[in-house]
Length: 343
Image: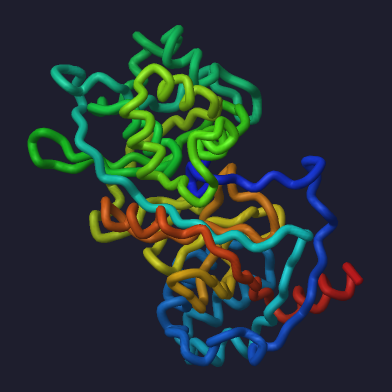
């Protein structure tokens, strides 16, 4: 699960009063989707079929079974789905995420001093565990055999947790892959917003690279800044995932560069196709699949686009903080029922 992320470190949105408005559901037509006819529907169809078998609802199961007959993709979506715009009163925010690739070692030594921890056996899902600061300062996890690998930089470790998965380049030239295992039950707090609140940067100046450089230049203050985000992610090794496949998402399946989005499952069914209309310097009109989540991805109009693996993907993902619109494709009968029920 690509988890814990806001742009992933930048500016998270906080709703006035801390409460979400009641969502509204508006059924659209495919003609109302900007650029629908120009997309590569086959690419989206292939991603959809990778996870649709994991959807429990019978309506989804029937569609997934029919998809095995390899229908014409655009016709498949237009015949069996209806576009539904779900809104909660908040403006759309698209951000980007990626899979980091970092130098590391399975053994501690030399520059490799910062551990990637596996899931503690006393961690209870949903219950508060040690905070980030307590784990770093009090070291309650030391000596328990939880270290999966060691990194050379605490900022790399923080960013790995923000992304929720990554590849570790080992000294012998081999590669280790880690994926989301669990978290400490503490709330996510945006370190980018903390820097804005302190007057260090303006909102438009904050990016992953800016945060990384500031923390490295201000070691003591930087460490305390990272502690403000009490959320802490634990990992599991997933090196069995082929190198040519994306990291595992929330559905425990590989996600796809440029076709996977992380969403809030309170509003969007995991595995559902979603149409995005992203504004900004690099507009994007594309059919994606909601295959991932993130603890900072909250709201009906909130999505994180997966940009791939490595530094270049990270640079592209870090540029994204755009408005637009996201429309969920629901099975036709389900869409009708939801829209009617929420009038």
